[in-house]
Amino acid sequence: MPRDKKSRKKAYARGHKGEGRAALYLRLKGYRILERRYQTPVGEVDLIARRGRTLAFVEVKARQSYHDGVEAITRRQQLRTIRAAKYFLSSHPGMASLDLRFDAIIALPGFQLRHLEGAWQT
Image (cartoon, rainbow, N blue to C red; front, side, top):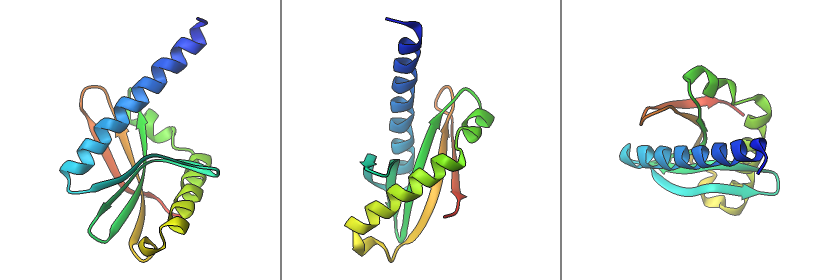
């Protein structure tokens, strides 16, 4: 197997593990996970979570440093998440009246997680 394929597999596994840790973290904070790896024709959302009247669309980045995680959330990535969120809301119209928020969770080595509430706007 070529090295680049191995590193992609490793990154995929690290990302999947980071999403699991982030989902657990949000549940412990009182959120209910509605979707995990929500895929649409226009984009993907790592986690969709609800707590009270807040509906959070969460991008999870597993990185070695906080700075690398924040840098990985590009404007292009944000727009893909926004498009996927709109797609989700079109198929769940009852949730459109909730307070919508775009969050990021940076999963760091160990069990360190940094939750950035309202990381970006539409």
